[in-house]
Length: 266
Length: 197
Image (tube, rainbow over all chains, first blue to last red; front, top):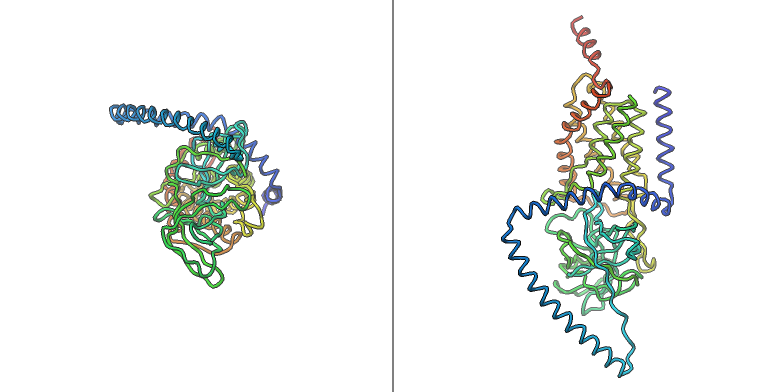
């Protein structure tokens, strides 16, 4: 080996060792700096993508869009009425609670966010959302969609965040099977691309008696996810010598994530 | 040489941005075109080992900065067996390995036989993904290698191979613009002379 090549190889090895020995905090700082540099290019790319998409949509069928808009306006008006009615009921409820001296419930606060893109990772299941530190988002905040639990915030930057989806093996949730004493830890599986992703529910009792179709909810243990969020339905139970496992079909369609909601941390 | 190296670096940065907008093909087992890896592989066969290693470090470092997952969080008494994430910087080593693999066929490439490099780029992507997946299995435990995973890796490699002539063409254009000699015809003539003798 030539001296210059050997020197380059040794420098490469020391650089790799330096990177491999960085602490979690330093890695987060590196990621934050990297995305701060990349942000203007990503924003420009996103804008171009949105313009291209809207142009194609307009070209596709303007009449169809007009009809859809009209129907959405009607639906919007209807929802406005429902919202107004709901506010009245809430006010009435609060009055009655005060009259009966009930302890007031914590107000349900959720921050809406738009899914910007799926991140280009080979093996991780993550998406990027358009809410970050400046919107009060913090790490490990639970994320839900209209179908149920989506995942949790993995990385927060100034005006965007990364969400690790429930279908990723690294996103674990403590759950309870409806109508049974069975509880376990649910997470994604490696290499699940056929027939939609299935979640793996582990640490069930050996003699777990669960019928397919039974719903699975979060149980509020573990300090990340609040209780009673729908996660999915049981598909099958696999008994084992020490504990049983179940395959769970997620309640959310992860291929069609548009708007998600961030719940406050527990 | 310096201008060519700098333009390779810029090309890699551009690939990192474009990669963000390349979707995974759900119909093909979530396979996708790995543009950053492809640009690195094609570039690494056109330069010497020191530049290749510098590019490997840059690509691996930035790739991990883009994709590394955070700590699992939560109560460790409840989440007692978390799925471990890969350490930041592992991609640097993987990029170095596939870079050296590409360097292996550099003499043929310099004779002008770039077609072989396109196939080796596909093979390198395959090796890179298999190695990455095996590391995940090793770190997290419970060896799983499903048919879907194999197909995802295979289709990703094929997709990447299909785009490699385009990247080579871009590299040839950059090289000719900056006067960097990628193809060394002297080697070809020398061998011909030997064969005639």
